[in-house]
Every structure is written in structure tokens, then in C-alpha cells.
Image (cartoon, rainbow, N blue to C red; front, side):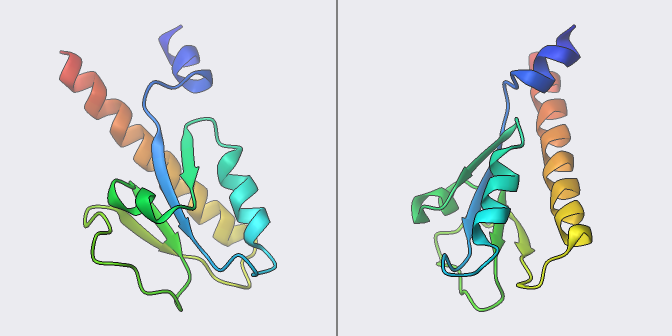
Amino acid sequence: MRQLIQQYRPANRVKVALVVEQDYLGYMDVLAALDNIQYVDVSTSDEALRDADLVVTTASITLPDYTNPEAVPFVWRLNANSDHYARLYGIVHELWIQKSHLEKSELN
């Protein structure tokens, strides 16, 4: 039962900072894809970079110094295909599993 609750009402969430040019044609697609994952909090604000677990950005953007140094970087390709979306999902899912195990071990 706990696993079902964690899947649909997750207590821990992966914080994703999306730093992609908003005039990029696929911007809304990647934003919607991240927003549709139950255990993701996606933000496009600069403030989100401070405590993000994952930073999705394009190669042309330089991240500010206050970006969380422990955040996992993911370079979004402008010609992203389904494999690229799958890699992004895989990273997000792995971060969520790590955070879930960390939370569980802190409870014990």
C-alpha cells in the first residue's frame, strides 16, 4: 500500500529547474513532459537553481554561480527525439528512487 501511495501522492519530489530558451519550439513539450510526472516539481525561475536536484539546460546557457553544485546537469538538445526524452525520464526516476531510499533510511 505504501508503494501505491508513494507513486500517486509522493512525499518526496524531484526538484527540476528548467533553463531553456522559451522561444525554442520544443520548450512547451519538455515543460509539459516534466510537469506530467507525479513526483516532479518543475520550475523555470532562477531561484529554483539554488536547491534543484536536476538542472535541464541547453548548451548555449551559462548557469549562475548560485546553482546547486550537487544538482545533476542535463543538456537538452534542440533536436530532441524520444530517446532523449527517455534519458531525461530515466534520470528523474533514478533521482526520485534515491530520494525515496534516503527518506526511508532517515526514518529508521
